[in-house]
Length: 144
Image (cartoon, rainbow, N blue to C red; front, side):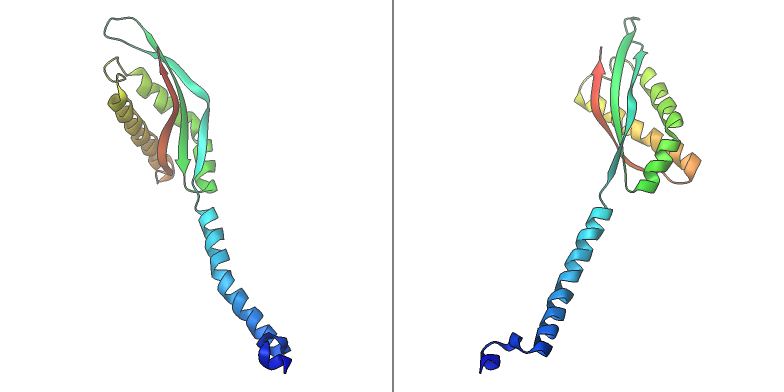
């Protein structure tokens, strides 16, 4: 009588029910693990880039840039770390070529960020055969 009211009281039915529940849960768990594996990684260039650049008045001005590079996986991050001296050199050269007009305003800073990303990707493409870096972010950019 009890088996007709509660179909899961039969041991065979319990096993089948358990298999069904686990079968439905496993794709969700696999999807969750896959989403964690695809999270981007951020590599900060430490210490911050600090240097000077020319101004239209002839007076030297200074910058400090805290930069993070977004990569897609830990292998790419390791390759970026390996090439960090080349990346830093390229960015210091780019920043030192700037002027008041190329650093004035939000649009100018965004253009500089995009150019910095292009140059970092060019360095890595030359060295590794692929750009490795998905994005470049200014965590802090101070112009004095």
